[in-house]
Length: 393
Image 1 (tube, rainbow, N blue to C red):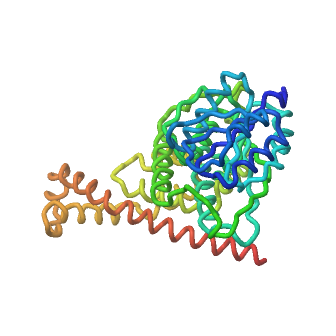
Image 2: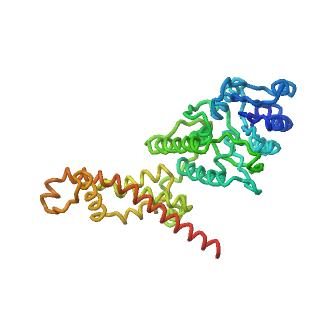
């Protein structure tokens, strides 16, 4: 079922982009009939800006103070829900995106419903910030872990959201981290992720205006990833917001084709980062005192986090008893008593077992992160090396 273009709005959140926003609005209005500007407490907008919007038939909403990009998008969402809009397409006001790429979104939205569309930026030219490249790879990796979905540009602000579906969700974030949270929650809710290639313009560094605060905003983004991963580890699924029924998985019939099933497992999230994350998780859980249930714990976590199960299960063999538990107990004993455990006797092991378990746990909480970090680095380096060799062949 398609969606009428008349029910699609272009939303432009703006905060102190006075030198670029007027041009962005004009170009968006040339592509779409319905445009909404949300002024998030700007102090540098040009004189007569709101009169210009009214003359073009552009609607606007105003925040009395700066509340964050996520808050601006949610303000637009509440307004458009009242307007019975089907979709809103968000575009940044800093001139980074090309409004002339809007038709690519409209064409896709007319053909399907329950879509979440992300404009994948083409990082070309001399002025692309190195931090943007790293940030995109970082965000793409965590989206894969949290949802199992692959996206070429999780940090792009050029997106299309279904209004009615989005209004069913509740969000914790109100700043740049909102765009991280909303992407994950929408995919959990059953929306179909689609991408369209879009152009991007980065001016020279001295001309660039950005309100992204590297330390604070990266901290906020990291914290929401921790929160989302924690939610993903819970044994129930998130609220579903899509109309269509979820697609059924392969079912038990896949076990009738073990070779194909094994190939599928080997290829699952088999990027260097994905394999390294699986190795780190498998290592961390293998070191913890979970006798008899290590394999089950690793399987559960890797299934929930969409990690490579073969890697995680294989690497646990490096930490089988007795060496790793002994190292943990030794370290735990030292942390408790200030000296190393040297009385390795039947009495000290069996009769004092409750103390040994406590020391095992204490030592593992120190060694597990260290071993997991080492496994991540080693597997990532090896996987990158092998990928490079395959590329040269």
